Length: 206
Image 1 (cartoon, rainbow, N blue to C red):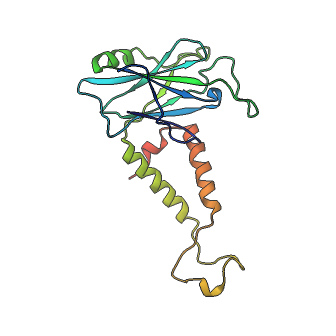
Image 2 (tube, helix red, strand yellow; image 1 turned 45 degrees about the vertical axis):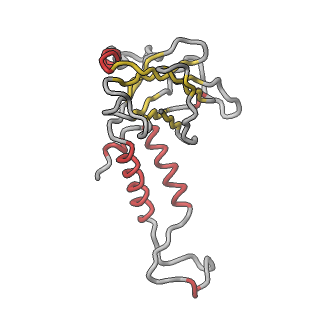
Image 3 (spheres, rainbow, N blue to C red; image 1 turned 180 degrees about the vertical axis):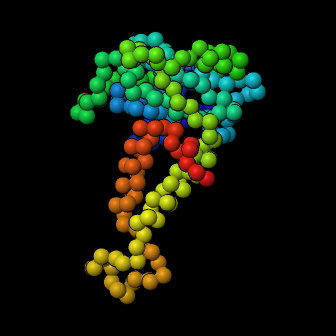
């Protein structure tokens, strides 16, 4: 029913169902996670009048509300960086996993909980939730990512290949070529921009 994306990792759909209305994702190396995307699978919309709140739990602490998803907003990006007091990512040692809880409730109850979410008011509130929601549907986001890739890759096209790359007989003057490293550069550039501003893809021009 739900999916989860962590930047740099495979999409997760292996959610644990606790009961009819409660679900749980376990995400390894929690302190290394900056943002997550929680989305509703297109084949499993909420029943009419229902939505879901999204929460996270660090180690043995209480579950904290991040935000919500609903049929009218089937995906959302949540920032987790800075939500783990006393934890510093270590590239040589994996940190404890975090739990992402999803609770299916009436839409009225979900909206009342979201209204109580307030943005941080001072630098001392490091445990306060930070939420950035994306209202754009998943197909539109995917289309914009593909367009972003196309525009980036075409900026590297060339009809002049380095000497010795392929034989002259195989070169078609009507075909443009793109260096493979451009794809890796695009991936790094996109992830860097998402970490800095998760909503930038929503503002990409059509």
